[in-house]
Amino acid sequence: MTDLNVVAEPSNTHEVTSTDTSPTSATAPDSEGVAEPSDTDDVTSTDTIIGDDPTPTPTTVAPTDSVIDPTPLDGTSVSVTTTTGTALPTDAPPPLVKPPGGQGFNTTPTYHAKSEFDTQSLYLGLHQELIELDLFRSALANFTDEQFAEAGLDGDDKYLLGFMAEQEVGHATLISNMIDLDTEKPKQCTYKYPFTTVREFIDFSRLVTRWGESGTIGFLGHMDAQDAAALVNDAIQTEGRQQMVFRQWMGLFPMPFWFTTSITQSMQWTLLAPYIATCPEDTPVVPWTAFPALNVTNNPSLLALNQTAKVTSNETEVSPPGTEICLSWAAPGESTGWNSSYTTKTFATGAPAFAAWISQLNTTYTPLTDVDLEARTAKTIQPGGGVYGNGTAPLLNGTVYLAITDEDLFVTPYNLSEIESHVLAGPALYNIG
Image (cartoon, rainbow, N blue to C red; front, side):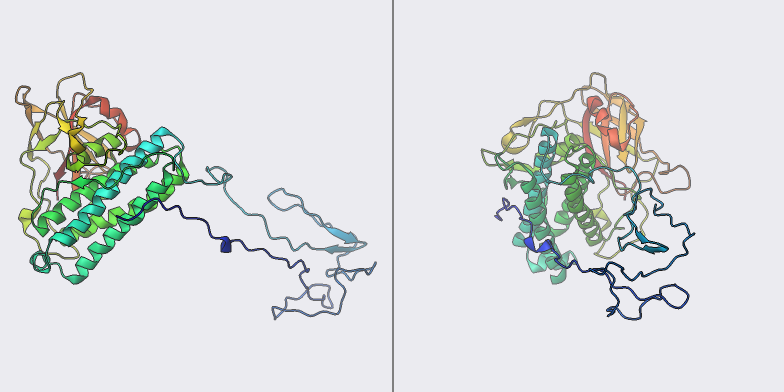
């Protein structure tokens, strides 16, 4: 296991100190009193520009009745040395122009968690990176070259998968170093995977990187340590690229949406927890809620398309608007997480009434029909629509999130957590295309 507790120290070579205090040379004025630009970088002049001579030679001559405004456009003052009828221009660079506003410009970044919210969000992010690291390495270790070839992947593809594993080492190290050094951190656990073939591994990896990306994007804007969030954002951008590669290895269109969907930490934990089998005893407790599992019983299988690996494919969506969706969900109180040490919960007080479709910039609700409270089953209809209305990109495409709620609460990506008190089950990942 790669040691993740390595704190990168800043390099001393980045600090440059200059001892050159000599003045900048200038050319002598021409016959009309206007200085001509130099054709060379180094100018040698016998005129005294600044020295002990009580009557220095001026570089620019101005009429005695001329007006020289020493105030730049930004309102700052400039010191100008003058003699009778002369002015010596300063060599100071123009002031840095920056629009007002923004945050974090006058503070020294520390790249560490600043609150319990930050720490617990980073814990969850570290669990995500560690399962991906193990997932990619296990595929390389357990599948033969022949099995990869049957899925349409060759040695170059295996090298790319190995590099993805190296990326996870980098991401896990980054996040680990942001957590306080005197606290326990999540360590490599053991996992249970639902695949036996290379193609099934690719399909599962597509889902893991999907919810990992969405969950991390969901909390970055809420972190108190925005300096740390900026670096985690740099890592999660790579995760999105990994997801596209897995889609391409399945012969799918790599990015069939305009915007990446964000979800909450509890939604991410709900999807991640069932695949963690065991963890070391000192692994910190995850405080996020695991909701009851939701199953789409007629979820289209993208493996059934039997596509070969390719850069892109212009395929029709496998689940168009108007499709009837069949749902079943578990009761709260079931065990999940490592060593079955967590229990699923719901805080909703009402009966299941809506299916919440979380995709791109929107959460869209469709009413549940044929609700059977005893069997915990229901149906709904897949909605249509565009991101910005008719004529724009489909609102639902790729892999979307589906949850059961008791209310159709209006939420946006930034305040999506408000829906959590109304979730009875889910989210589940649903394949649109």
